[in-house]
Amino acid sequence: MNNEKAGFDDEHDEYDVLLAELGRTEEEDERIAVHEAGHAVAARLLGKPLGGATINPDPNGKYGGLVWGPRNSVAFGRDDDTDEVPELCDNLRDLMPQDGEARGDAADVYLHAHDRCIELAGASVAERMLLPGEPVPSVSDVEQAVALASLVCKSAEAVECFLAFCEQQAHDLLYPHGPVIMALSIVLKIRRTLNGDEIDGVIATTVAGLQLAAERRRRAEWRKGELAAQRFRASCDHADAAALPRSAPDRVR
View (tube, rainbow, N blue to C red):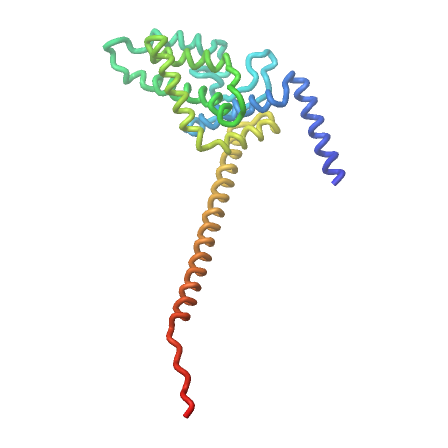
């Protein structure tokens, strides 16, 4: 018991040292983990493969945590791109269909903007689901979402409505999967960085555990029903036996 307590204290001390080095509180670290887990789970629910996720900050201060794809760390970009998403979207805007032009050739851009905005909204949705208070706004998420929405919207009002629509979709997508987001955030707090396969492994293990628990509950309910039926049958048999006429005693002559 003492060895276990000592091991726990050592791990806790190491975590405190790490937080001090990062300049974070434990609450901030948890919020970042939930934030990135929300991004990751939203992406996987949309069928998007992942390259990995980290809750360690960029040494140059570009981000506090990050989720990236198998090849792209940013939308429409490569890992070695120097342009940020808003600049990339600005370059694409002039290539988007104009009034009266068919949208078919740009359908993949419209779909990407839609899905990516849902992924971006998934982080704040996850924070609202699992943590107290309002999410801390992510400047990077907001900038990317506005830039992407501006590709498919013509006015600021349309951008606002589009982003609200994507946020609601993110909520509807993530709400049934709160335990998965929580599990992934816990593993991220421990491991700090996960690759795509490891993220999928955490999700698969959590889903399997939830399914097993649901099956156990189903069997327990089934067994409860069987026992109730047996008790009911026994009470009916007892009532039937009590209702049977008793034979009259023989008369003594």
